[in-house]
Length: 419
Length: 216
Image 1 (cartoon, rainbow over the protein chains, first blue to last red):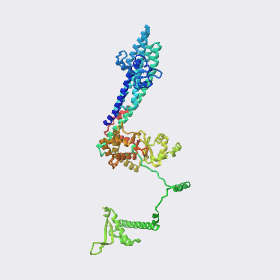
Image 2: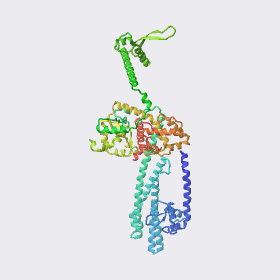
Image 3: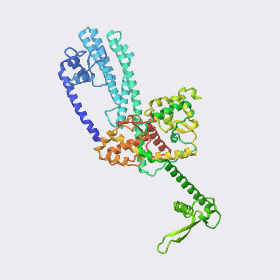
Image 4: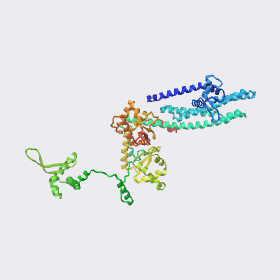
């Protein structure tokens, strides 16, 4: 099977290569715009054609957290840039929620400090960082959920073997649990205390975040139940495959295997009880007055059979009657001879019974020669074993001295019983 | 009488006829009939109708196929069922081997399931450059169950599909197109395999199923 997979992977790889090169080039082409998106809140859309923007979305370089909001760098992109420029303040060392929450707490503290000091520029910067942290948190969930849906919708099509799918599914389920655990860490009571009565922070950390996270929670639950469902299906498929290959292997190893006759059980198992087919048949009937005209019409509609003229001429009625008569007489003769044999069988006499004597004693009118001929034919038509049940005594004489032709004058039979 | 609940008994004539002819009715072979059979009152009405014919409506464990069973299993019925059982057991290995072959040749995740689409041409194309597959098809096609006399791959594949169609495992929606659908009778076959395994306590892996039950 592996050669199929290899053959399928080759175009995939080259496609991946082309797409990757194309998308990496996007970074260079739009580097200035993207860096502006990194240092500020949104990616500035001026100077970006709709086509270019579409490509940036497709490459997951930018995303739009909600319909009204601006276009932002994706968390991964932000992380990448942070890694590249070694921006330690923003470097996502640990992707877990606990760390992000810690970050939020610190940033809120700095923001308050700047606010108390009246350092508005610093305050603005801190707010920007905080907003990005919240966006990143939101983005990470959105990304993870998106990735889970992608996997689900393709039935884990990126791996070809069922066992791999089962493993991938297990991994995805663990991811869901981790994400749900992460969501559970976010304590809104704590956040409410944290923001106090600052309207901007409240909007950012409470109303906006809460709405987004509750959406993520719903999605994750949905993903989780779908994953479980799919897993059950995978397991059923696995069980079916094993059952088929297991039974096939067993039958190959035991060619003479015969299971019990379940049909002989007092309680026939439901599965075995498949009744014999019954095909309802019908024939044309003329006992319903209303059907007569219908049948007449059908008869008229029958395609007329054209017979060759000669055939009609040749089929003289006299001949048919005669051949029917011959057949009837032949049948009568056969039946009379059979009666003779039965008589022999039934007869308790020890003496052989003569065929001619029987003919004369009965009221049958068959010519002697024809009678004898049929008696002999009947005898020869019997299976060998049944022939042995009769003692066969022909009365015959040589036809002449020059050859071995013998004339049969009569036949006598005695029933000896079956050996 | 239940007929009163189902004044349209007349409209079920074709379904009754199919069932009486020994066919298996599933969502693939007759979707609308199968849907109607989900209705318990109809099932009861059909049973009442079938009573004088000593038959009743039966189904498999998952209720994915319907067929007719003897109502009273008398001696003649036992005789017929024994013969049928014998046939089923004799056909089992070629059918299972065919299932394995299709699964492997087409690189499928699992055993064929009702509704799956099969194209003889695809199987043939996959086998043409694969001597081992080619050989397995040949061996299978010349098995007495499939009964191919030909030495040509295409004729062998065709014969195999023809026999599977005759036995109700496949359905050919358009007689002029070489596209087949797997019917619910395949479920019935798998049920059989499971049944024989359990009844005869055959040493065939059942761990997965136990795990699956636990999971659900």
